[in-house]
Image 1 (cartoon, one colour):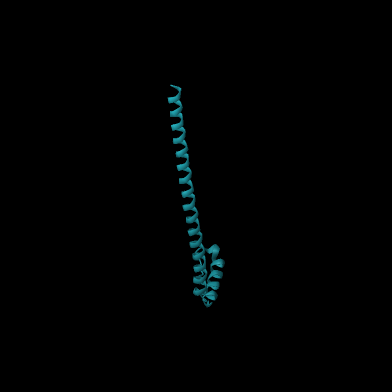
Image 2 (cartoon, helix red, strand yellow):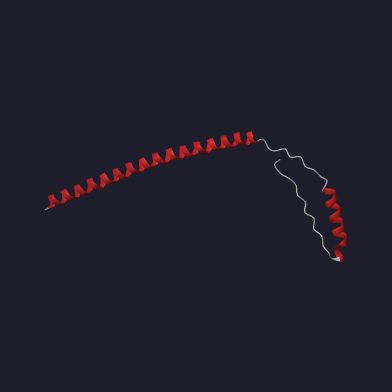
Length: 101
C-alpha cells in the first residue's frame, strides 16, 4: 500500500503510572526497530481505471446534454403551438363579436 506506520509513546512523570510509562517506553524501544517495506500501488492501473471512469462520466454528460437540448426544443415547440392556438381563438372571438353587432 501507499502508507507508513507511526507510533506515538506517551509518558507521565506521575509515580502512580510509573509501571505504565515503563511498559510504554519498552514497547517504543521494540517498535523502533520495525521497518516497513512500501509497495506503492500501481499508478498505471489507477490511471487506466480513472481514465475509464472519466470516459464514462463524459459520455453520461454528453448524453444528458443531448437529452436536455431535445427537451428544450420540444418545450419551445409546445409553447409556439400554444401561442398559435391562443392567437387563433382570440381572432375567432373577435370575428364572433363583429358578427353579433
